[in-house]
Image (cartoon, rainbow, N blue to C red; front, side):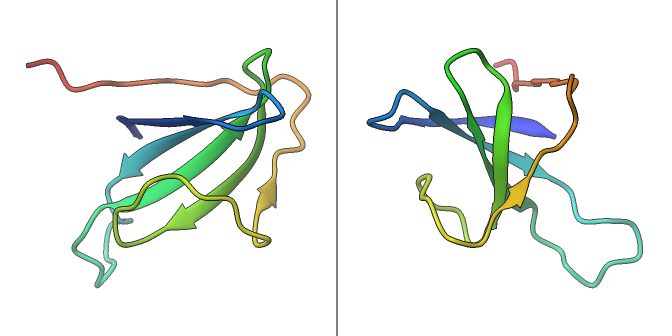
Length: 80
């Protein structure tokens, strides 16, 4: 998963960050998939929403809640 550099800070202090990842092997999808992940102020993920086509972060009612007590977050950025 690659961080796209798009972020948005919400009024409650949570932060939305957008990530891109390649479609699964064998998928007919050819475009990268974009996911907006909402983090709290401590950096813990709260929810994730798949968004396509590329967009600025938005909140929706369709989210997946992260239930792991201690998630591992890996951020990768392209180096120019």
